[in-house]
Length: 86
Image (tube, rainbow, N blue to C red):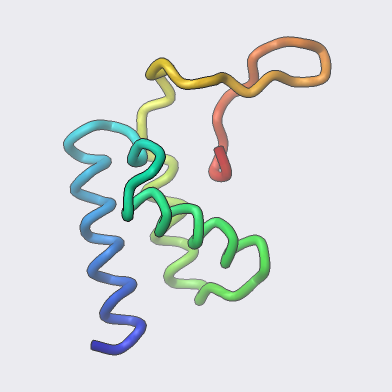
């Protein structure tokens, strides 16, 4: 299986997870590690434009409801909205 096929397989798995739960996966799972790696690839400019668009679209469809983990605080001490890299 080539890299593009593997990426598509993981993407479909993530898409199903988000559809089922409304969120990206919890910590310490294989799928969560894949999500973190994709964020790193985006930051480093190493993802194809098509993959980046698909990943960002999926990130924007997830629920922003707090699920019990730590919330990110801004410098002012106020809770910030989650973004693509949260």
